[in-house]
View 1 (cartoon, rainbow, N blue to C red):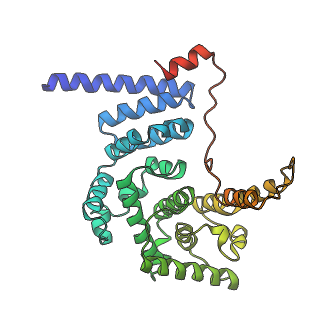
View 2: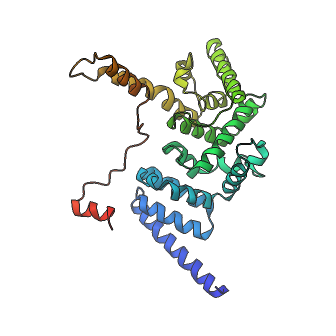
View 3: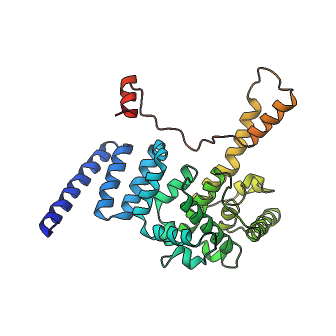
Length: 305
């Protein structure tokens, strides 16, 4: 493609982007328009803007998560630093890499400012092996930070707290399946004890402390965690507390009010019920988008175009 053709192609992309923005000005909740605008921005090289539009599309239409492999490929296209980090971790696995090798020269900035990554972490269990291994490494690095004397200084970086809370939400959604060695487990247990002691004494708590603890165990299982709701927190941590304390509490309240047609007395049935209630599946994160009623013929065409 010569220079004239490139200019024409870029001009065409600009016009297409303007068209999608006009659509969104009229219909800001049009997930398809957000998705198509994101694709155009990606072609133009506006990676951060594309990531934000992809995140908006997935938020508006959670069904897009059914195309998880495609979403991961798109995520890596809009975030080359993340793609490079995944490759480094994958090539070294199961050997643990130092933080600098995992994060690369950009450090946490490579992932903390990516709204698309945060959206995917908060919306569904990770279903990509290399991404899971990368996030497992990130969790270990954040545990090291939260366990060190540097934890208070890190609170000044809101973006670090945002990605930490998103990662903790992911761990809660996937029921803590990430790999964790004995030394890491011990360090996480000590961090949990530190949080329990601070809650019991009423001492100040750095926001990164509960957010990293929540990446290793649900906060509702932490003694005294209810008092976390009585403190003022940044928005990302407040949202995490809602997921891991308020909502489970509400689930238990609602569960106690559900009527029973018959009593369950058989020993096996009682154990099955207990097992299911301890580990319900699937755990809904967000309802499907409501795009209004459609005819059967229209619905079938979406399945079999």
